[in-house]
Image (tube, rainbow, N blue to C red):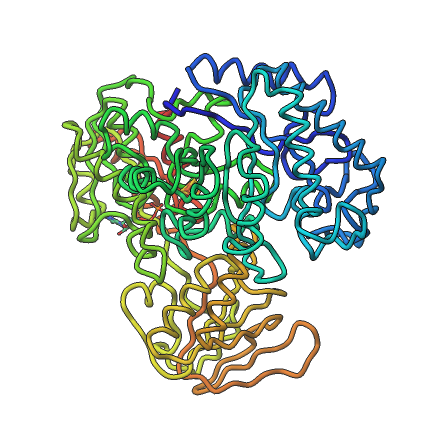
Length: 617
Ligand code: ADP
Ligand code: SF4
């Protein structure tokens, strides 16, 4: 519907021993699976797009937790990233024949379901074909091990089998990771990766190239720019005569066109950009570039996939609600009342609420205390590497600016009297949250310490850059602790980054960033201390008590930043609700709260809550 040329599935398990549960996957291991895929294909075709099926056996990654089959791989090895100490069986020739037969059968089922492009998958360090290709996983001595030609044999056979089975009607694509960032232990774009392209050159009808592993392929904006895969994939088109598609968090038509014109890619692939804006191609086609809701590269979507729940998107609150709630990504129902709405607070919740209510047709006034809109997004985007997050603000402000029924008032702190006298029948409070200052009770802070020694992330985002030795103590475990540590270290302080958790910034394992963040902090010289509670602070020193029973650590410090939890800023809402008669007197019919002032969470939570409120309004 949004104008995409091809809509491709993610992994489709080809057989029962390709089971990657609890991760979400589709299935084509049985004839009964055809019907379900056919329904999806029919809808894709209805909108004029082609449908692609990514057939996959994830080999050393398939723990078969649901099907309880024995895992298989090129050699007997521990499974990759498995939480259980389980090994795969080394495949013999009959296993290879079975795998090829299963792949072929799945390709025929994909064709029967109506798919137009059938993929052979060798990417992300996940596929069995990749495991055969990789020297580190393949120590076979037969014709499937040893030389690159031998290690690529299974991949070649899968491609040939698929072409022979479905090539009369379907295109056969190869998804291939040309660079693994493992040096000589893996495929490199200017070494064995390029050699594989040379070996298989014109065998696939389409090369779909990317980087491995998943964390390298799906990098966040904190660690990479749009189009970051270009230096690694640009050689592919020089080797093959077949068309090439690639990815790189593309949201800007200029970058896309530039890559196509310069002969880097023939087609632009997009997963996250299509989540943030399912109508991206249509907007480009119609010249509505300003209307594109650009992905901010935060990987909250991947955090959901890694938690086995429906995907959320920070930018697109309708993601995964299209079916179950009937929310269209581009339209909202028209209004059911003529009431004017006053929204207090112009953070992500206030902006989203204003936009969706205004699109519904309400006359909306948005008042923000600060000189600039954006709330936490504007403040957090000033921290190192996440400037792209300000797109949450920019997209909404840009759209609000096009609507005649919206009044925007920055630098307008609203007090109780202002709201009562404003004359709007509906009031929405979106006043956000503040980081909690350290307290004796919860953080072991001793009373002798000078108050200005202990800071919150808000103080740092407001521009305070204390010098000397700084303890950043993070009990939240999200992205903020590492960002504050990085910012202060870059500003010249010596930072000790401590946490009671087993590892720092645990949430970022889900966004595929944790190891990158910890490597960056280490390279900057930040000292990491885990498994410790902040047990006491006196002037000039902090005591960290080990949760593992080791000796306490007493460290000299000049300042502390405590990254704990946040306090909802709900004073105005409470004041308004405390006197319902007065509200009636001044004609206010409802007072609602949305976003962090209700329950602090991710930006995605605030945007979603505001959008939902506006739809239900
Ligand atoms: P959310 O994520 O829920 O949108 P934020 O903290 O990002 O929360 O945004 C809340 C916004 O509300 C901030 O920009 C803050 O300046 C603004 N705000 C707080 N109190 C008032 C007030 N009394 N009048 C106007 N704006 C306010
Ligand atoms: Fe992009 Fe973040 Fe949305 Fe994922 S959640 S699509 S990374 S904006």
